[in-house]
Length: 228
Image (cartoon, rainbow, N blue to C red; front, side, top):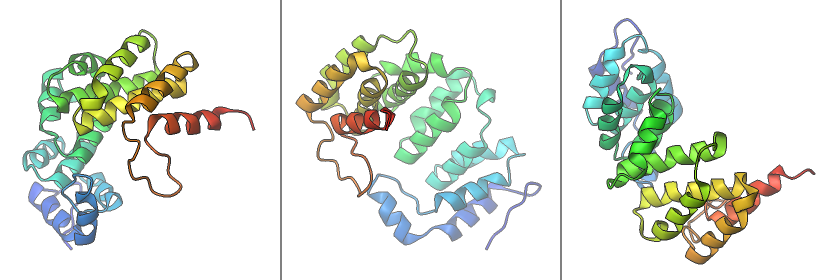
């Protein structure tokens, strides 16, 4: 197997290692979720640990357009080094679901410009950018809701979620659930919206996992908050 070290890593070496780690069975499973790679994420993280002293490598890997390479790049990016415009450009290139999720969680969320970008993307006509704005909003609803117009966010969800593209719909549904879970004063309305619109009601959910259907998700998470 091709090996890399912190002192001699090249993009070609990383790509060669990712090719060797690619598992056709994992690729088939990932394809069901719109992801076009077959590398075990634990192994991918191990690849990313070695070249972290080479900041230029991340940009080179991202530039390949290869999904597994971009996931490695995300793990070695330095979020504080990016200007808002650079983050915006990279986000709009992140069309693959796993790349999009990781970029928002590991780069945007750690950027000093996260709130600026959240506001810019929240109403963006591009669903790739808008879904990132809504994902960042869901995070704020759960962790730092001060200043958010939760009633207004529910208005937008009620009006738009039913016809939203898949990734944007998922992010809006996350906001709906987080409002219901974290904010008791809006819980009944959040549940009502979910029940009437039935978004993700029939989403296939593995055994022992919580359904993303907002009324079920809210009820399950609130029950865990209650004293035994």
